[in-house]
Image (cartoon, rainbow, N blue to C red):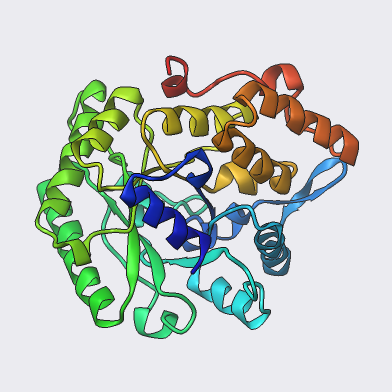
Length: 328
């Protein structure tokens, strides 16, 4: 049993505590944007003018696994294979997971325009081959209010569920906000997404449902509405852009306050000056040991002690810059 299984059991039984909040690290940028998204190489003086190599990226993943704070490590199937070969998860309570599909809205290649079109379903990873590495994957879907595109996405989701059932594979479901102009008023997008989530899951039996959700934090009202509708559905939030360090900790604090039980962050960890300190302090905030502002102070103290140059001055890094977090 991994920590993930233990925590999900307590959450579903209604006996969970703050310390059962699930933190996942999304180290899967090679499945969408590609090479440039693995992040810059870093030295004491900050980012180097080159991207990390695959080997450097794998070592950064191993470091987070070895820290033993996150509950889930999400990677591409190719990188998980390498990590398993290197015994990165040996004796670990961290659950490995793979990105099970790579829809076109996450294809953010340099110079490309794929993401300007309504999301189209696509899968690279083979569940038959991946099953030897893990039995958990992230499936992603983006509703765009485009009938043909959304029907195609739902048909692909149905095919994935059949494939998953045939291979004894479970999944958690990521639902993005529309990636294109969806002919919706901005204020109606959170409600549209909530309705789309409920509709796409309503026809599923318990065995077919996702272990938990990963969605955009669209504010307190939208999150509370979804959580309150079905307490049996474990809702988590995705990290979005890198933002400030305060944004990272504030998002965890607010999401937890309004009912989220999972945070799955990628860039907020991957692009940090000290990823292990970000992860350590994410846990401190979710456990209630530190407030978001105290965590930012601790983070900058840690950077000073390690001689690492911060990307932002403390006065800037302690500010909330993401609009959705300013009124939570």
